[in-house]
Image (tube, rainbow, N blue to C red; front, side, top):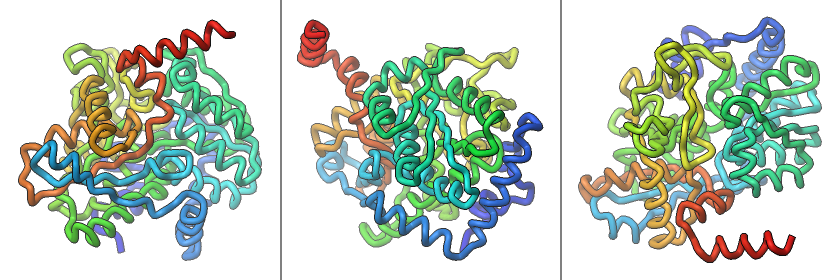
Length: 418
């Protein structure tokens, strides 16, 4: 049974809204296909066999349940609270994104459509969608900002090998928001046989609700696992916040536990005072507005023009934030902080050195925030951090940030051989 706060997400009194955020501000041409998606999603949720079918798919195809790992060495080094991480990096395709896309794949089968499209920033959602399309026999097109294509080349390679067509978007800042715009344009003219597998808990209704529904498997597992060992709920849970899929998923497991503090960590970039960041909530730059089909906090100026964002992580430099998280932030249920690029790189280096775990740059924002606060907590307290992805995809960005001489020499030699 869901608690009162969870009911607000999945059974709201005003469909499509979370507090004052959400909605579906879309061209009339998309209204019919959104209504179809709402109907199919509601029917699936009402079908008692649907959630068990989803769980079975994730268990047999994506290594669920992913474990909780106690970071004993890091806890000893940092001091203070006991540190645990949820290992979404062990999922199929290396991130939590598989949860949502495999669930949406089951909805596509119910609708009988033959093609899927998706946006991607860091590339993890793109790879997961391409994997789902291959598994279910669907045509697949992935839109990706040209800047992100450049810095996430390994993921582009795998998307293409999986059979997807990758379209580099040159418009605007050539990052995630621009990829979303292109997806919406495509969908407006192909909706009869195409499903838009939106990757984060943003966009017009019912997408935030759909993504939250499937990603909550993270929080449901985590709550059960923490109660088994260390036999108590965590005092705080941390997750990075870009669009909001991994944070929403983890937090839903603890939303109705008032003694568990929910802490979202946004991209602090080069520092909040620099203006080069993506901290829409923590940075105070976010202003309520409507764009890309929904109402939330957007990174915009006084005239309402969208600002360019910055993050060392390709997955966190989005202009908006999930309307669900905006509601929790405004209501006080979620505390929002930020972590700078430098803090994130330091957190990743510490995690690798002490625990032998290579986290994604997105996930290491949550890690940086958790480590910063753990030292001042009591040893009897526990924190849980969502390690939402692994860092293989970030090798170019990480090597550049670390100014690794051997890596640079390797690239120089490869170029000379071309």
